[in-house]
Length: 364
Image 1 (cartoon, rainbow, N blue to C red):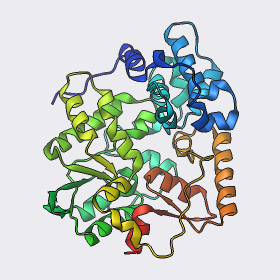
Image 2: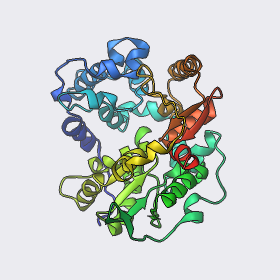
Image 3: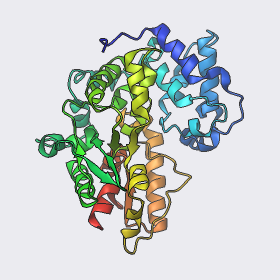
């Protein structure tokens, strides 16, 4: 596999045009209806449509980014709800993340990037985790629980599952990863944790450091190259989502892009994995009165917390979550994203935060 290639400013601009699809926007506004920052500010420049128009003007050299433009970019949560809603497949969230890598927008990450770069040669962003006030486990989940891959029987078919624990569960909340392991064992599965896995790259992508992100991803691809065509299980939705667009960071025809594209279809978020391979598991939870999360709060804002951006918006989101928890008299709040899990545990005391694997493992 080729060594990591630098990404030039020209590469970034081409990625915005080709992958982001700024020219495909038809101004329909479907993205605005699902955008957390537009709901918060109710101004067009804070909508995905508005940000895409600004990006197009910038690329055409009709706009010099000012403080207002930087503010609207910093308030994008990268939840990607807009991308799912877009009928012409524009990717406003990805456009925003790519823009952060250009020198005109470097002020956006002047606080968080130096912290991340302290660990650019490490397998995970330990300095960032410590800055966020997280207690690092002295022994990672991977070190304690790594097991050899074995043949699994699922519905009469052989299957091998590769577990990608992710940085947060691996180093900060190993109890959530232990629940995943225990649950899978109860269901008759055995999982493989390959040696040498690193951060999926998400924090670096959010902070405008595609070079380090791609370096981490390349090293992960070398590990996964030995596990081709096997199911990749993530109990962190953010990791699974990031793995699915790893290929965007590599040029057409490259070995890395081809490998990443092959992997993308094999990466499962934990709940999707269970629905496909063990669908009956959800019927084993007694007396569960589950409510679908509030549509008016599509994202809890953890990306803002991670990158220390838009504190007022973050505070507003947390207050709405607190209000919703009180109105519905919720006892537990269940999440399958490790960053959400960590963020809510740190910032929400009115309800017990548990992972999906913890809920299921405790009730089987």
